[in-house]
Amino acid sequence: MDEEAQRSVSFRLIRKGDWAPQNPRPKGRSPQEYPMMIVWKKGFIRLVLVGGILWMLLILSALLFHVWSCHSSVSFFSAICNKDSKVFTVLNSMGINVPEPLQSQHRCPIPLSEDPDEIVIPKGRTPDRIVKDLSYAMEDELLKNGSQTSPLFGGHQSWSQREESFKLNPAMKVHCGFIRKSGAEMAPSDIKYVKKCRFVVASGIFDGYDIPQQPSNISLRSRKLFCFLMVVDEISLKFIKENVTIKEDDRGGKWVGIWRLVLLKHPPYDEPRRNGKIPKILLHRLFPQAQYSIWIDGKMELIVDPLLIMERYLWRGKYSFAIAQHKHHRSIYEEADANKRRKRYARPLIDLHMKIYRYEGMGSWSPGGKTISDVPEGAIIIREHTAMSNLFSCLWFNEVDLFTPRDQLSFGYVVYRLGGLFKFFMFPNCEYYSLFVLHPHTREHSSAVEWVKNITELDGKGSRMKESRGGLGLWTPYPGNLDSVVLPPVARTSKAG
Image (cartoon, rainbow, N blue to C red; front, top):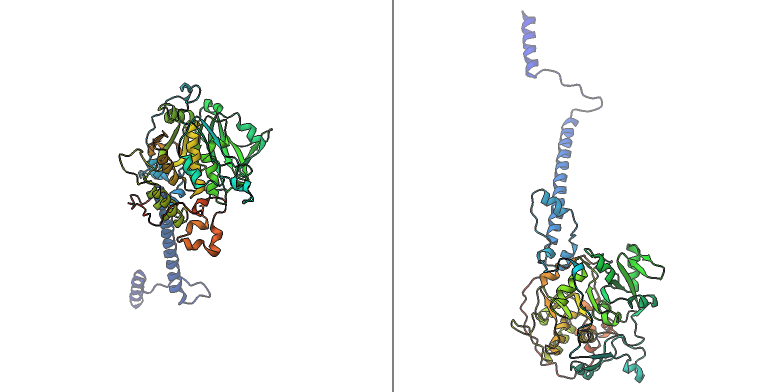
């Protein structure tokens, strides 16, 4: 009986687990190690879970930043946006509706003709009714006097010559860059090639900030009719060779896709942005045989057929010059304020530039005035190279050569000085954004002079920041008292501005 009672108790203890022997321990481990192993295993699991959560949060943050950058009004962040990114496609496929990037939000339909093959090109040239004979100064007068060792690209235009250039006459001779032996020289093979170009789509890359973007939606007719000319300096040509394939034909021409590269040797200015204004504004001097041209900045991909552009912006309304209005600004003083805030050039020199214009009677833009806007989006310019159109381009360039390289500050002033005699089409900004796809620069442009806040910073050692071959009007005594000039107040209407 005692043995049976003991077995019964032992059986119950075994079922309750109070007496049953534990799993045998591996040899060499003490009982104190087991709690540590359990803690370590649990800690490792928690670490993996926390790491996974942090990694997912990092990916989510990157996705949100990518989406936000495409809608940011800050140009640096909006430039990061990649229009071809799969992020938007994936999010939309998941049922998450993401608004289009900022550029797309500003687009609107363009009333284009349907078929470039059916467009009728005007015969002959638009008659010159005001200025009929336009010629250009080719010698630097100070060089002839012996007071200058090498000629300046824009010459040494005096204040009185500048004033006379705004007085329209049937026959005029004006400064218009390309002073003899001043730089910006083309190779003989390129000179020979462009002589056959009556219709031109032109672009430019300077100081290696971009690579050529291939146009899309170009008809076979336009491919045969237009010369696609990409003007580059030697730094950019080297950069392009290192990053894309350049093909050379048997006549020495260099090609990147549809673009013929046109090398400008010996850039005449210290500032790359000022060098970039040469092909942009002076296309009629660079390619004198061209009758029609479309300029598009190097960072842009043209997505509309050139013939459709010509018909919409020139031939339909019988214009010889077309440019888009600015997205935010109407007054040059608004644009100047934005340039200072965004450090586009030395602040005191922008102020001096604007004081000269204010002294000469340029007021703030107001609704109901003579122009839709005094500030253009200068990245696309459509022209017929008439005498009046060419004169406007010369006068515009002279202002860029004389003052700051910010051409949007000078455009409206030249229109104002011509007193409404220069007729042009300033088309809606939303159409402008529908003409191209914007690609970011390969790097951000910056020069020391852009950070100058006070004129005294350009004294002493700071004088090295001064341009030696451009903007000389900012350092030449002005024939008027600017001390009493007060710039108009500016209402900042946009964060992006």
